[in-house]
Image 1 (cartoon, rainbow, N blue to C red):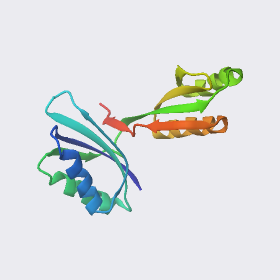
Image 2: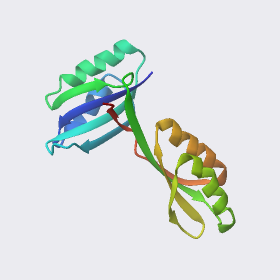
Image 3: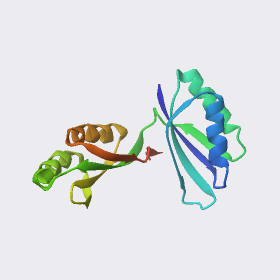
Image 4: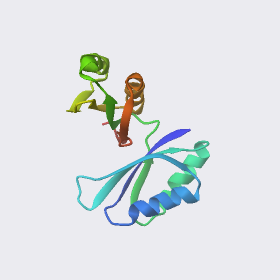
Length: 158
């Protein structure tokens, strides 16, 4: 079961390591983790996507994370109205003869071509995890050369 956790933590070195250690000890698989400074320079927001077996395990993970000294607050926002976004950079084989075709294929995803080389183009797509996955699958037949994803970041609405 996929859960999206958001943690407000102290912006200090070693905090990320301690958080991932807690998840590792509980043998929770981290699908993605994204960390950045918030509007307050001394706090960072972590968006952690984990795979847990059930709601009881998700509750235990939240309790363990909340016990950490550097953690101000942890929330499971999976079931709350929230926005989540992920960014992917995708380098695709693109001889000049098919570039316009690729551009037409990525248009419904509101993806952009951000770099052009002799034999390849680099595409940037931003959206939900599912939207990024769908864009990658549409581009796969052209030949993916490289792929980099940020993992999701999210905030509760309102």
